[in-house]
Image (tube, rainbow, N blue to C red; front, side):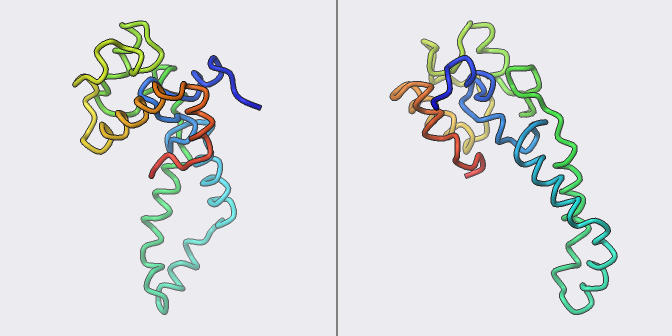
Length: 150
């Protein structure tokens, strides 16, 4: 069943990124799966230290464990809830000021207000052009099962 526009607005940020797929999202798959992996690993630290004597890759386990901890503490409710985690995001306030749901709906799109790095800016342009071309609902259906970090 196809999701309705109003439901999609709870998931897609104004820039077009899927908040539910973000590593920082409070109810996202990354937090859920990371929490489960931490549970399954239990007190693996002891074993990782033991295994590192004959499998050097396990010397990296402390850093891996620290990263898992970070992911399990994700608490962002999403960009539209005022929790944008991207430093100095220009989209987070702009779309509200302009009264738009997505950047492509603005007469100034594309603009230089995003403050995105070159890679993210390229993704932003691609996502918004695609939404404009096929519509928000179709774009969501097309991308909902894809990984966010491609």
